Image (cartoon, rainbow, N blue to C red):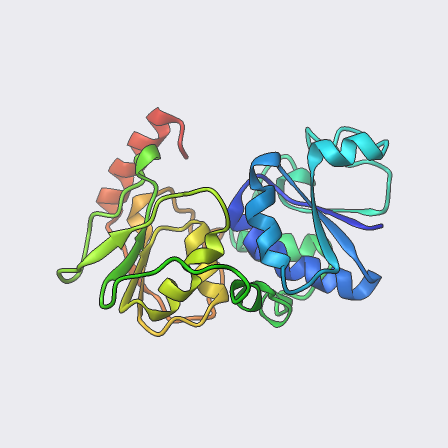
Length: 245
């Protein structure tokens, strides 16, 4: 069995889900290794591709003699694919390469597979969809950590989505049908990129830390980026003090 070790970030798991399907296509099957907290959510990403199994770090440690999977040390076991901060303890010194492309390069997988092998749109059809009010825009930020959407180009009637338990794919239909999507650079941004939204898309860049180049991932859809460098600088200072960068 081959294993792909992912980080504890949902956005990373969404971005690497196509890589897991690509590797499953190469090897017949693969296990996608995530933290315990993400297992239920991430498992739903692969409902349409049973060749990909999701397991936790603890489950893999119990069944394999893996050298410190928990702390990210790369073992000699060549059945494991590693990328991101699991493979390198810090981000590249040059910020010219977007992090998602950096991940795929580490795995030796062409970045176009990010779209060609993505299972999420198909898997979302197999998940119960949360009803969404007609004509209401979709908004997701992270108010618990002080990462708030506050700036709008026009008045917007929206409903805010919170990080609930279960599969985030329950909001796929809402994302595809809402008149506008307002998100920060987070998991719901990457989820929207996997789907086929019909409304206007707004990325609120000012709301959290932004590193030019490293955070400029090639997008499949057309986004209007709302930014305010001064506001972003103030927000980043607040997040730094809260430890939420």
